[in-house]
Image 1 (spheres, rainbow, N blue to C red):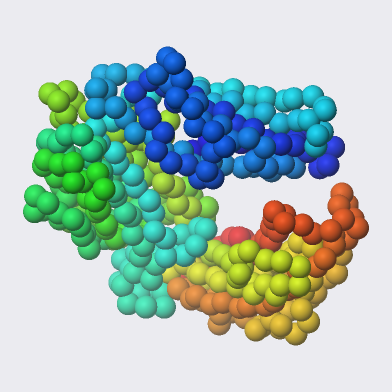
Image 2 (cartoon, helix red, strand yellow):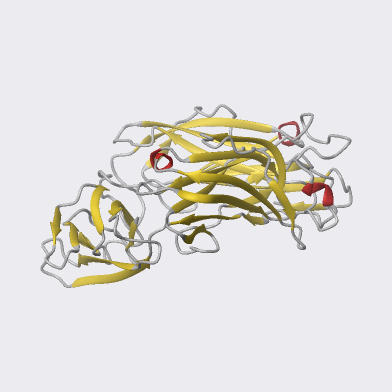
Length: 435
């Protein structure tokens, strides 16, 4: 992925025109595809390949643009080889290229990997993950068992040249994430056990490992996918929670109470033997391209989504706000404050739950602030709810710096919602706080 951002601070004044990107694939890599399609793909005399996207977009200050590029490795490369990819991006200060050019060049060094591993969190509450693993005997949440289980998906792919042997995939959960089991492996070409080996670390982290055996070239297009369930418990796991090494275990744990907004990164690694050499991939061996999937523990979380995602002038957009409350906490005095961006108009009486306030031109000209008050019954422990409202896309902007200018193709609307209120610990009544 090639990501470009205009770092200028002032809209219009710092706009960059006619973005042009040039990527040089080194010897041993050949172009296969890209999105968007490049203007030019040209093999060079030295064996490298020049890929160019000419005049693809104009970038407003702080605006970004990205390209997805795929290349194939030559079979002559081994896991001991190394190569460097180089990319250049430039914009002009004037639409007709009569101004000054601003350019940046970056290089990324790498080496072939015989295997590839990727891990993503499939959250059950969007943006932040509501806590709730179901370990409390008095079941303080809304349902029996875990109110807010979610999944991790582990994808292990082999290369398309030769087999990798003795393949092992490992995932390390931080102390604030409980392993709940429900493992699936598909495809499972070697009938590997779905039950991982479990290793409890001194800090309370838990490493799950699966021995996958030999992965053939077939696992390039059809990789092995492992899924398992997890949840955020009331307390963090500690070295004293030895039950965690025996299988799925939600607790109760013996560590500290997990605070609101705790970030919980998961590390992962795959290792194998390829061509007689050890090879690996993951957050430890290749941290530059394997970032830990990180969830954020929440006592209350709110997510906003709009439909349709691509709009024109006069389009009616339906916005949905949904909220999720932790299994261990009740919340009161909850306000949802939504700021509708300049370029959109709230449609009166369109909300499924009547707003407490509608403030025009707040916090600035053209924007609309809408506030909802949620009754305590809607925000008790383990609760989930949603509301909808609609807005219309305007023909022009009202506020600076685009006042009077038309809404045009490619413009992006950013709509934000902020929750506020109080939380009360059900398990430890003396604990209270604010969101």
